[in-house]
Length: 83
Image (cartoon, rainbow, N blue to C red; front, side):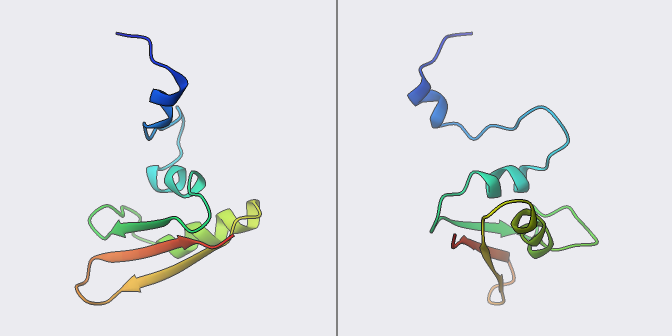
């Protein structure tokens, strides 16, 4: 164990204790114009795509996302935070 500074903490991607998925946490931590690639191997929901999660976050907050499906090669989705 060791103590760290606020700057060192900011470098870590953290997951608060609870039931939130890692994808939701990463989407909530995105800044405007940040881009996130979610690969199909990382997406565990069988009944929904990342677009569903983005639309749900948009309804709860003032954030806006643009979701694109990667067709070549088939690797997943690219999400851009636009607002």
